[in-house]
Amino acid sequence: MRQTQLLKIDGIERCSAELDRAAQIIAGGGLVAIPTETVYGLAADATNEEAVRSIFEAKGRPQDNPLIVHIADRSMLGRVASRVPEAALHLADRFWPGPLTIILPKSDLIPAVTSAGLDTVAIRFPSHPVAREIIRRAGVPVAAPSANLSGSPSTTTAAHCVRDLTGRVDAIVDGGDCAVGVESTVITLAGETPRLLRPGYVTLEQLREVLGEVEVDRAVTDQPDPNQRVASPGMKYKHYAPKCRVILLDGGRQAYAGYINSHQTEGEYALCYEEDLPLLRCPAISIGKQADEAAQAARLFDSLRRLDDEGAQVVYARCPGKTGVGLALYNRLIRAAAFEVIHLDSAPSTGEG
Image 1 (tube, helix red, strand yellow):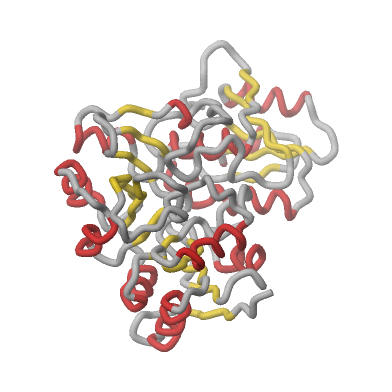
Image 2 (spheres, rainbow, N blue to C red):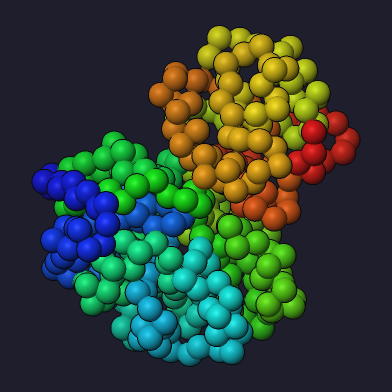
């Protein structure tokens, strides 16, 4: 068991010693949970095979699940990718630093364990100043999957990391709550046509504004082939899941409330929009107003963790729309529910009331 330090950061200039300590641990082959704008990441030197293996061990993560490599500035891009096409530069101009991961052919600097044996590497340039400063001071690209136990809801606060990873990592950097709240969008440029592998805060619509044609991988919304080799984190069958059973209800507000109210038993909860609350007769947690997808994203994983804290046994989650950031919310919830969906009416949900 590791002795886990808690390093509180309340300003880059005021906390230089704490930032140096986090960077020294990473450069020395250790594990540090760091804040990013999306979720907290479990960071290790992406070029150090032993350090990367310790990420999988700490999380209980299958080693066939590739890791995202984080860089501190665009000058590091050429170190981790063997080829950077023009499309990647256009995306970087528009969305970096920020919540977008680009998959490119990997350089020899990145070991096979980091890329799960693939000849590609997932690369992100985060916008969170603490993450960037730690990577810069460490002097190495950093592999940083979500700082949680594998399969459970991602961590968006330092307290979540403390709960999941105390004794498993060398340090946890408390840089406050994550602003975005869902993992980065992942797009691969390794094929002939750009393909969305995981939706996030950078939306499909925004990607198409830059690139034109962008395909959507079947695994974004549908059950993946269990024998398929995944090209990106978050493509597995069940992911982001609390301990309680999650069921996704696809339908309008009245149908959603009517179903839950007629199926009430002890231990059942609703995960819903704020506007749904007056109609429900069971315990419920709101992820925000229906029109505010950014707020929903920021609250989603914390809400899933709260459901376990409150002793929920079954959770009926309101199905979000599948456009904009709603597609990212749907992608996370459908995996939290292990693809268990009840369609309440003939028309699929559009996120409308």
